[in-house]
Length: 194
Image (cartoon, rainbow, N blue to C red; front, side, top):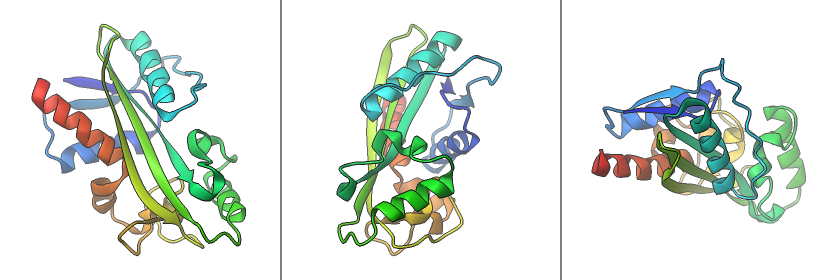
């Protein structure tokens, strides 16, 4: 079974492949959408689920294949759930996004947060075949730590650990991340149905 991932982000593709390997999923070939295609969906949904669907649907329109999209982001309690669906557009660069977040939380004692990932699988006929959601709870650290991962990983302290996501090895992160939790649900569905 070949599934086209609705992304041109190499980090995301590699992470999905690693999660599949970690959970012993075989017979599924994940590929990024061809960079020669004009894949540029307008993510104007109001939820992670809506944006995930928009991306999967556009990838399906271009490829007529199984397409999978995820939409994910960081939701911070003290910021009313922000940056949320705007996580990737919160500031111009990854470092500026982290700086803006830490600045917004200066003096804040409630630093609870969660990473959220919503996924949508669309079949070659253009129908939604599966949707799932994964969450990873934690809090925002006072300063950055770690060199792994990407995005907000250096400031996200995972519940039940003393580590940020960026302090964790890829295998550690891929067992507990929001994307991993959403993908595990998809893998269970695939194992039952294919």
